Amino acid sequence: MSRTQSGQAPVEARPRRLRWGVVLVWFLRTLAVLWIAKGLMSWALLLGGGLEGKATSFQATLVYFALIDIIAGVGLWLTSTWGGVLWILAVMSHIILGAFFPRIVTLGPPVMIAQLGLVFAYLTVSWLASREEG
Image (cartoon, rainbow, N blue to C red; front, top):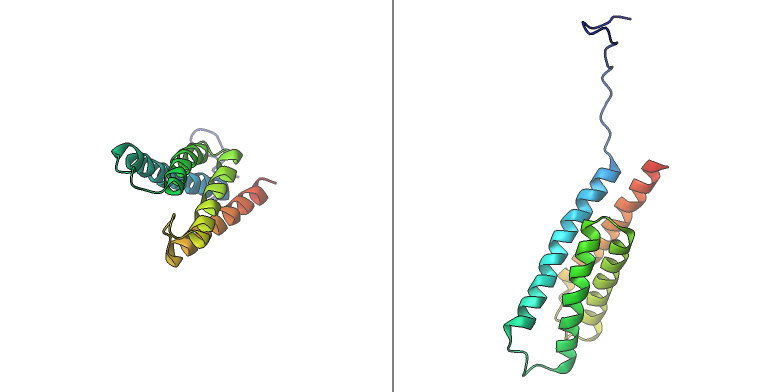
């Protein structure tokens, strides 16, 4: 075995593997930025006024998403389990309200498919990261 000038054995070149734990953290942080921005847009609508003429159900839904999106975004940023669970609750609430109450939450099929795709990606990357650790 040959030694370097410092007297230590050279490190053999190993192929770099994709670390799913790192991918999960980046994915969660990206989602966090998006959902905090979504929550801030809801707050902008709330604080901007002009809601007096809107239905009470629309106002209540707006308050719900203003709160849950910000809290879910913070939980995602912290990469905590409760953040992921709350985020899935927020996404599924948005999809269900958009599907069954389109007058309150306007949500087109492309947005529904994109949100379901994000949930599927989250579950897949979380599963891969948990298998990597074990």
